[in-house]
Image (cartoon, rainbow, N blue to C red; front, side, top):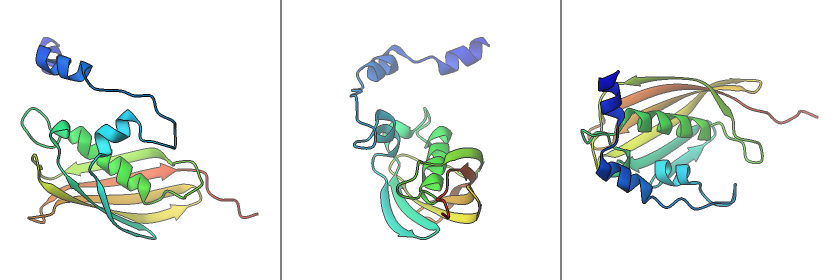
Length: 158
């Protein structure tokens, strides 16, 4: 237990950095939240088609772990966000993640440019399944593959 506590504990420098982060109140739906700004700032949507979203993302320092690699939690977040974006329908509430499975196949380091591709695998009622591939854009190496299941209200047929 003590080793875990030591691993998770922030140094005084890290703690001070976190305490200086500006957290401004925001209006939902009108401007990004702290979370969106922190986790997704810098993502570029390159292509959108029915059932497909393709993005580019350069690994920022704020999302790296202590070894300088893209943190696994950041990868999971990207799978969640890009997987959810491909099934989002304008005017309806966002879908809720039901299940996510991620295979971490390689690593990405600071300033690597990544290609994120999300495809719809299928839909049944309000349930959707997606697959998200995260690749190193320069080498083509697959960093992670995520399967993401979501549920949301779908438009009435009346």
